[in-house]
Length: 324
Ligand SMILES: [Zn+2]
Image (cartoon, rainbow, N blue to C red):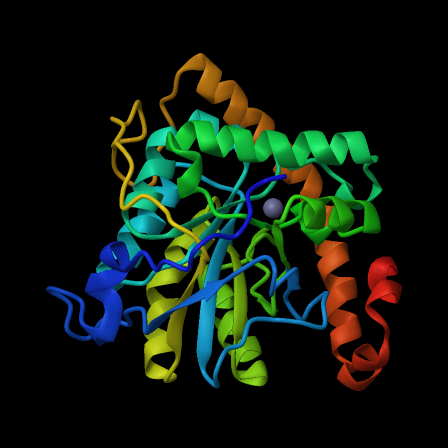
């Protein structure tokens, strides 16, 4: 068992500067309006793209999430942008990436963001994996992020399935581990080949406006996403949106020891200078990500095509959505 929910405790210290709409040095910042504490006992599977249940958000409340990282320098640029606006998000990290760039993982945590996991190495076709491989991917991802961050209590029991490749095998195992399975309410297609920063902003805003609220899925490993983020946050502010940070019930450390970066400093954009080990890990992930793109593209398209008929989707029992 992963870890049971404990006493409700908000990590207000790390979120404090953003609360109440104040952001030192940035009086017009978007900020983070509130913290929502959830327990795996209450929220097993969330995100209306795939599940009946989502987070209890008010009108014009948005939860921002980033998958697949960390990957410098893009993740660093995203962190800088979020810090400038005092916006707190949830990361779903890939284990191999966390092991390659632990100093970025620790910055994410120390900047006050929520850290969830997204498998060990983001395999293709997660929905077709046998249980032993699912266990290996889920447990290996958590162990890797635990190791990178240096304190398992800093890692939230939040998991997003790679490629949103849900199956009964996946979900039952995640339930058994007391992990909250996160899907999403809104995507911005930021993994599409050749999509521009402007298109990412337009799609995110148009789809959020259509739903009025929701969990937004983005990827901090893509340059277009990193470039889109400043404008996206500006448009969220102008559109009257409020950012909600989600944290798990239970105690967490206020901070973790900082690690010195080993090669991800430098101007944006630039060629990464990494150790051979890090380079191999990154290359594997980027290659895997390229293979996933087509499959993920079609998978999300199918999901969204279904959502163009909300009445029909709403009437379909959750168990029948496995084929989407
Ligand atoms: Zn992913």
